[in-house]
Amino acid sequence: MTVGRALWRDQLSETEQASLSPGLPDNLNRRPDVLVVGGGIVGVATAVACVQAGIGSVVLVERDHFGAGASGGAAGLLIPEAHAHVDAPVLVNLGRLSLTNWQELQRILPGGVGLMHLDWREPDGTHHPQGRLNPLRAIASLARELEGAATGVNVTGVAVSGGRVQAVQTSAGEFTPGTVVFATGTPPRLEGLELRLPSHEVKGHMLVSEPTSLALPESVSGYASSIDGGRILIGGTLDHGDDERVVRPEIIANMWSDLEAAWPPAHEIRISHQWACFRPAHPDLLPVIDRIPSLRNAWLTSGHYKTGIMMAPATGRALAQWIGTGERPAEIVGLGIDRFSA
Ligand SMILES: Cc1cc2nc3c(=O)[nH]c(=O)nc-3n(C[C@H](O)[C@H](O)[C@H](O)COP(=O)(O)OP(=O)(O)OC[C@H]3O[C@@H](n4cnc5c(N)ncnc54)[C@H](O)[C@@H]3O)c2cc1C
Image 1: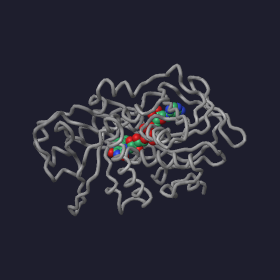
Image 2: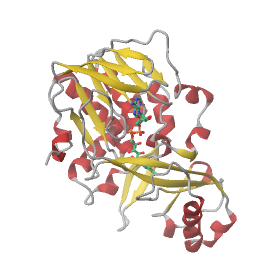
Image 3: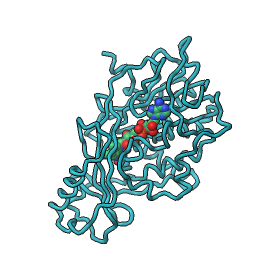
């Protein structure tokens, strides 16, 4: 979950805010072809990808509001090139593919997804055209594409027999879907589901300043960014070992005083928003995108750590393709659950 006050919701229109909390529609399909559990950016993008792939009726359920988890507090940077030569090639390549998927969604969805251009520079000065978005705006835009979506629905258990999920129990009654995708941030702990893979969360603080006409110098560009309205964004920190659902004022103060030390005019600028959220992670810091072993009709995507906003559309498309064709797409080989079996 995201704690504190993130900037992103304040930037949304009332219509966009309403799209994040549709509640429980009376006519919600209880027997969809695909049930997606978890309304973070990955779950919403997966549900939309399944609709676009034409693999039948799709329902998305979320226990809170869409974007209530890590997604609603992320910085929203889409910079696959920052991961080149740093992270595993599978992550870099999926990230590059996903950025093109975001660009396509921006073109084809009515009103786009709020994708903004970001000019990202390598330490040697090489420029790359990358992207940035308000993650809640992107989620609201995607959620509007879904006919079957509900919030305030907590998934509590599954009934399994014959190697298939036959039913999904929720706080709003039972669903009997053809296929289930769990996109719950970290892997779900559900009655009836045998799924034990190692995961944890890494807390991160973020802050945004009041709008300012002062221009950030190039020397702090690796630490602080100028965003819409002349605001300054800093974060996120890596607060290993701190799982408490609170914003720590001393961490926010340190983040700002680091900026002031490098750029004294920051002393005149006030902080307007401060928040913390929790990156879902597996021990190797790579996501899982896989069918659940021993279940023919259940998939899991989890542990997107620092790059779930960037990865969401490519992850969703890979899952939709796998569900539709029965074949694991090549771009996600290496992101399986079996890497933890040893
Ligand atoms: C400070 C910070 C900055 C970040 N910046 C970036 C960035 O710039 N770019 C980037 O790409 N990534 C960034 N990330 C990472 C990104 O936020 C995550 O990787 C991404 O949000 C994960 O998305 P998700 O949909 O998998 O998980 P979540 O957003 O956590 O969504 C999972 C959802 O599932 C729901 N859920 C869980 N269990 C159940 C259940 N039983 N029943 C119903 N619903 C359930 C939860 O309520 C939640 O809404 C950042 C993260 C942090 C913390």
